[in-house]
Image (cartoon, rainbow, N blue to C red; front, side):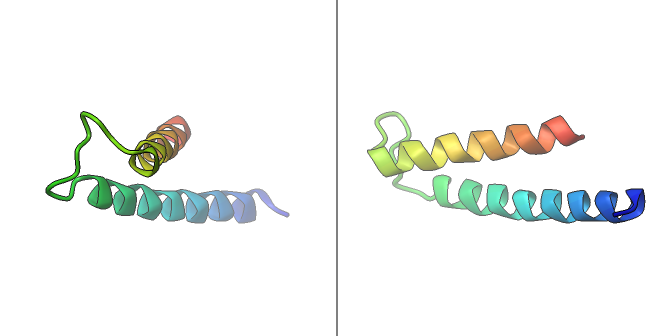
Length: 60
């Protein structure tokens, strides 16, 4: 694998993570979702959103 190929794969992965982060953000910002007292799935989705956002930020 060349440096260019590696950079291309990393860029594609970051784009994919960005799409996942954005989709989770949209789901978590829907009206009626109680983020003050979230259920287990909402809490897990929120944690996943945060981890993905940190991974993206760490790359930049």
